[in-house]
Length: 139
Image (cartoon, rainbow, N blue to C red; front, top):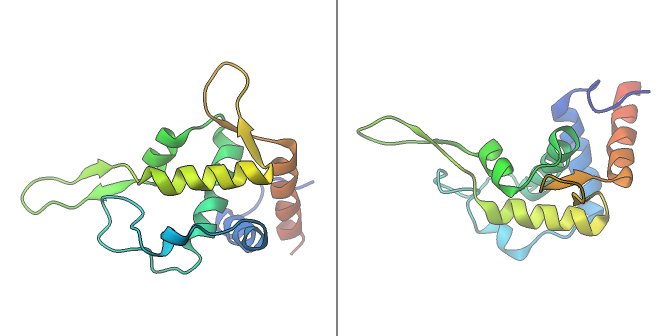
């Protein structure tokens, strides 16, 4: 049986984003905000919200329990400066937080009840991603 470790990451995220379009509403503000302070423009991809949500779901599956702070670091990038060196800047937290809330409403992730803070994948979320992986592995 195939799982998320056996298939191409980009294909999993793309197919997961396609499936999330029907289930998860897109916030109204998402088309007008940058994804972080290090970006100059808003995301050009019209499916940015769903791609980011799918990627966050995959990160929770692989690295859970994981919280907003670690995900901000994960999705951040370098800030360009004119005179001095580039430095890493965290991504914006609101898009990540709202994606986590949306995935939690779907029942794919939940707050960790044991020890460490953060979000963990539920059986339903694990099954969702494993079905996608199995489908991709057949092709």
